Length: 614
Image 1 (cartoon, one colour):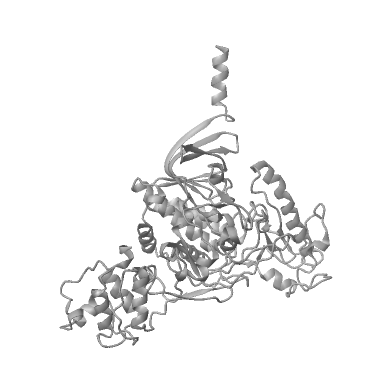
Image 2 (cartoon, helix red, strand yellow):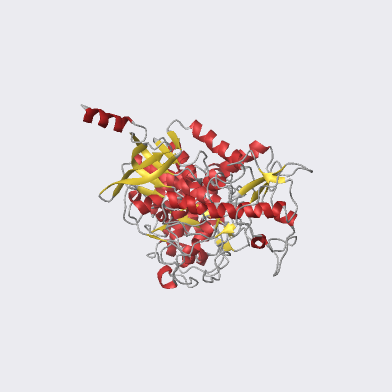
């Protein structure tokens, strides 16, 4: 009897209790990617759970305090654009460039409130806060859920059809035995000529903070941090002591870098500021927390330096943000990178139309940020000559493990090279890869398929319905009547984009109103289907009549909507202006004039539908 009583108390005690929950989709981590994934899966009507170790949603954007976003200003894509619109509504303005580092700066608690409001609207979505990932559930080669530990020591077992790893460092796929990479890579391994050598060195982390201006005459100076060394912050700006060359900005400009609404300042300053090198990727949670304290102290030291040496005593830790002004999690720029169905490297960004893989056809998210690595705090980091890049899209296969089923990855753990991670790690891109991960998971659940079995076009179709770019064309936006057709035809490669590196906002242009030669059009068809035999037409500009003739006689398309319109190909009567305007929504009906690229995209999409043909 005593033995039975002891056993009953053991399983009933909070420290040993286990709760079992079943769901369709489990998202491990409510960070930037995880929040987008969970909301997107739930919007598709599948039962979804987000398990988040903090009390906030949004990760980098909120709990990590990095609330000035990087990139995608002109790519108004999907949940990223939805997030910006929510910020504009909250602040009553579309001008959120309060800090010079970004066009979109906001207070972390505002972003958290937006995400929580979205979550509240989704009846299929549950968020479990204060739940730390412990281990995966696995049957043979398939992930079937995960086990979590709550703050009171109790366990929650979540069984799921699809699990999404949205952790900051890739803890789920590592625990599941999925192969991965950490650190810099050799060129032999990465297939990138600019890759340096293999090391385990990752980018610097930052323990960000938010300061608030408490007004002239206020003294919010914090206690001098233990181990404080003033010289650590020399040369952070021209107002600071410096024995070398200071960063070319005075103290005010340095603070305005991350200026937020309502007289607050994001402290995430890389130049002799609060970047900090450590690699805790392979450590357990307890060890990580202990080691992270060094990064916190370094940031507190920088704040103390700003308040004392630079004289800004009126700027104190914001008592209404995060953990009394300090981030609740570190800003991890880099973690593990999974081995996926495909591996995306810098060659695919630099020359997307001339790599054998043609990954651009399978894009599910877009980005325009340059390759940007933070390595100032580790002198042993090998040098890399980062190239200037155009904007890019990310292939679906980077989200799917090479061999393991039941699992999708978002956040920074997707299957990219170390170099490419410097461009795909930014907040807008991670929001969009998270959205794609959630949609992929929902489609897999609804069709009883593994993620690797889901057709990429099915995912892209749903993304397009959600106004998500699958091609990074900056000059045709979702409000255009022709946007979806241009996105679809662009993803076939028949009509290519033109990439242009432009500093911190790289671009790819479709040039919708420009013309195209017959040779260019035929080259595009041959790229789409190598069996196409060119008609040896001259290199003149393509007319509407010749465009339709080529489409109808190419022999590589599954033609549709042709009945009643064959006259164009045979030289007979052309379909009338009413059809051109009313059905295709095109203007200036004249079959003998030169066709514009957007018109050609519409014709191809309507008659040939090459997007769904391959």
